[in-house]
Image (cartoon, rainbow, N blue to C red):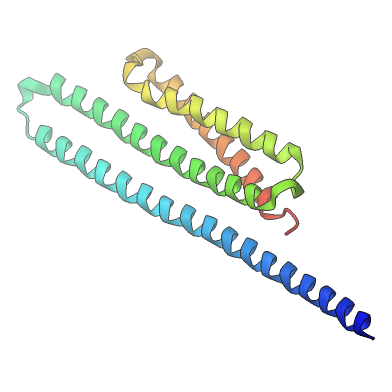
Length: 176
């Protein structure tokens, strides 16, 4: 009779432990998402401040006399490049935040996630690092190559955003 009582209690406690573990995993997943959302808000704020700085520089050159039109045109070109670089950095940082969230969720899932998701995450992380280097070197791009380099980087970031969304979605759907 004692044995009958012990077996159901053992099963019941195992069920509770599983529920607790599931709750802890869900809380950790929610924390990962909240961390990404907070990071994205910080990225937006940084981008806003940088664009305001660029705008204030633009305003200081708008009142230049006619004799300094070359300086004014050069200033407009520098402003365009700075705005693009700021926007590209912000987009990339948001992608990296999504990749970090996916990485945290895969760590929580432990061995339940297929290796292909881990591989795609690493591939995306590697691509993000390369794009970051390209963005850092934009100031070195000559005027003739600017338009094509800008288009290339925009395409790379768009591809990376799609890849990151795919990895994040797959990480979200790993069996809990």
